[in-house]
Image 1 (cartoon, rainbow, N blue to C red):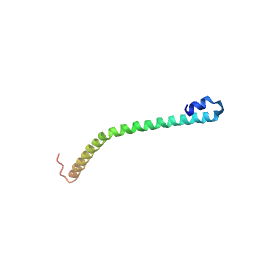
Image 2 (tube, rainbow, N blue to C red):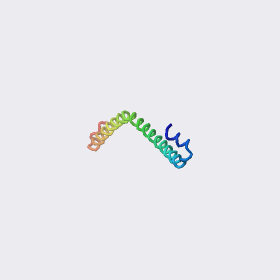
Image 3 (cartoon, rainbow, N blue to C red):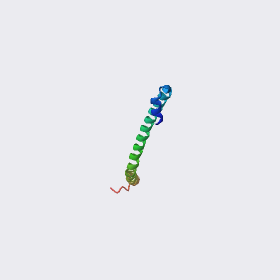
Image 4 (cartoon, helix red, strand yellow):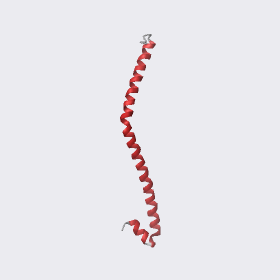
Length: 79
């Protein structure tokens, strides 16, 4: 018999039963938070390669834009 069942069976342990119930509820809430955090982390890790690729492409676009603006500032715009 586990501790929760023991506390349920024995009426002399009302305070302990309430304390155990509160602790179990706290652990359930904490467990739900951890599960949600893990789910969010899994999604972030799964999206990381996509984000990295988009970041690289955006960096190339910004670099090209800076180069074009630099050439425009010198009067050498290729367009």
